[in-house]
Image 1: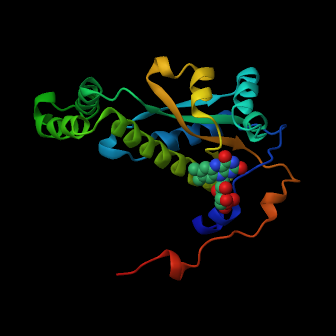
Image 2: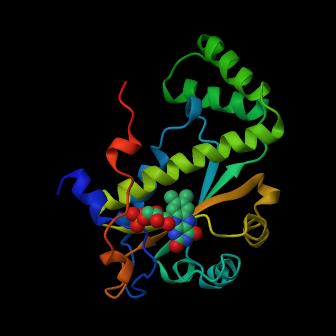
Length: 209
Ligand SMILES: Cc1cc2nc3c(=O)[nH]c(=O)nc-3n(C[C@H](O)[C@H](O)[C@H](O)COP(=O)(O)O)c2cc1C
């Protein structure tokens, strides 16, 4: 299957087969894809929670308008944006680059100035929005990677972030729930899998200049 065929195969799964679980290597590949997601400056301004605990998931389902994907999928992935992006976060990131690429930290002064400037130029609220945008990119990468691997995914923003933050103790971790995805395998009788995709025509969607 071409990548386009795989993207046609995928759909936002509403009904998961509760008996089918991702294997450990399948889950690892999805997490690899998320880890490799691009982000502004490479800052990865979020953390990603992989939730399997049935009791926690039951509570989260209540905070997500009862959506069954929350409890029935193999795993629930929560993308939580950083709420405390500060100079220290930026500096730690520059140290990670120096370590990973085995270069002296002092040689990264220009990059450090740019990254710290990008953080300092934003208000705390703008920093959270900035982080949330990056979380959505990671969601997109997850959804596409899952399709490529023949794994089903249901992206969702139909949930109460404040309640999620409370249930998962995210506030004290400097995080806020932003967007979520259920991953697993579709139930045979999920009628959404049979629906024809509705997409705006290319001549309305694309502008070639
Ligand atoms: C960011 C985002 C949030 C979404 N939230 C929900 C949701 O809360 N519940 C749901 O059933 N579907 C949700 N969807 C699925 C969309 O409705 C679906 O992707 C869209 O209708 C296109 O259909 P398809 O993905 O099956 O091709 C969401 C999708 C995205 C990308």
